[in-house]
Amino acid sequence: MTNYQSWDSKATALVRKAEEEEKKEEAEANDALGLDGIPRGPPTVKAEEQIGELGEHSEKRKEFIDWSKKREISQTHKTQEEPIMLDTEEVKGMALRLIGSEGVTYVIPEGSGVVKLVLDKCKNVRVQVLAPIITSTIEAYRCVDVTFALSVPMGTFQVDECVKPVTVNFAERDHVGRLYHQNSPGLSVGFDGELHVEGRAGEVQHYTRLADTAAKHPFITDFVRRGEGDFPVDMPGDATNLELLEIARKHGYTTTEGGQILREPEAEQPEPEVDPEIEQNRRKAEVKRAAGNEMFRANDFFQAAMEYTSALELDPKATALYANRSVCWLKLGNHEKALEDAKKCTDIDPTNAKGWFRQGMSLHAMKRFGEAIPALIEAEKLDPKNKQIPEAIKMAQLMARKEAAGA
Image (tube, rainbow, N blue to C red):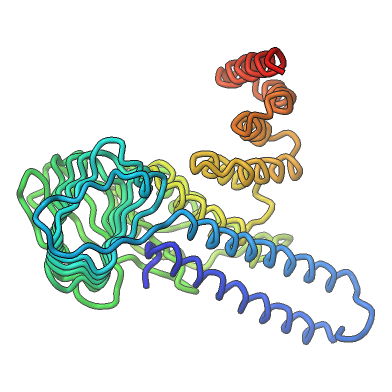
C-alpha cells in the first residue's frame, strides 16, 4: 500500500525490508571479499559495523511497532440513532481504529484526547470532528458512504481503496491540509459545503492540495512520483514546503513556481573522494528528514518519528535526526526513548546544544530534576542566545528545591 498506511502495516513492511537488506548485504560482502571462515581485515570489519548499525535501526522499528500497538485500540459499532461520543477514558491518549462500523454517527468533542483516527471497512458512517485530533491525522481504508464533517483544521488525510463515496468537508479553506489517496475514485473534497471529486482509480498514489486562490478550481491533484526502490522523488510540494523544495532544487530537480517537483535530476558526478552510495544515501536522508519535519509541523509525531528513523538508516551519524526524533518522543510521552535519542546525539557530537537541551527536558519530564540541571547548563553554554534554556534551568532548580524540601 502507500507510505501513509496504518502504523502496523507500514512498520511491518519496513522491518521486513530491512531484514532482507541485511541478509543480502552480509552475503554480498562475504562473497566479494572471500573472507568466510578466515581472519577478517579492515574492509570486512567496516562492513560488519554497517550491518550492525542497520540491525540496530531494525530493532528500533520493532520496538516502535510494539510500542505503537499498545497505544492503539479498536472498536466496532452497529446501527444506532444516537451519536457516539468519542471522549471516553478508553480512547484518551490512544489511536482509535473503527473497524466494520455501520450506520452510526461519531463525534469527536473537545477534550477527547484521541491521538489518531482510522476507519477500516466502515459503511454508512458520519464523523463530526469538533476538536483537534492530537496528531492531526485521519485515515480511511476500504470504506463505503463515509462522510467527514470537520470543524477544525486537519493536517493529514489518507484515503485508500475507497471506490464508493467518501466525503471530506472542511469548514473553511484555510483548514484544508494534505490529502493522500490511492484507488479511491469515490473521494470528494471541499470546504464551505462545495465539494469536488478528486479521487482516482488505479494503483498509483495521488495527493491533493489547495490551488492558488486565483485558480478556477480550488484543488490540484497529482500523482506521487517515485524513483529507485520506491523512494518518493517528489513529496507533496506546495509553495509552503520551502525546506523540501530547497533540497530538491539543490540537487538538480526541476520545480514549478507553485512548488511542484517535476522530474529527477540527471546523474551527478560525486567528488572523487566521496563514496557515491554514501552521498546518495545522505541525499535521501535529507528528503526523509524534511518529510519528518513536515509531519512534525502537522502534529503527526508518530509519522515524524518514523520518517526520522528511515533517515537514520540512510545516515546513522546525523545528530540532528536523533535530536528531532527525541522531541517526537517527548511529545508522545515516551520520555525514556526521548532521553536515549538525546544521549545518542551528544555521544556523536558533544557540541550539539539541542542534544543537551533534549536530555535536560527528558530528565525534567521524568522528574529527575537534579540530573536535568547539568544537561541544561551544558546546553546554555553551547547556545547562550536561546531564551528557553535559562527558563528551563530555573524551573528545574525550583522543582529540585521543592523535591528536596519535601523529602
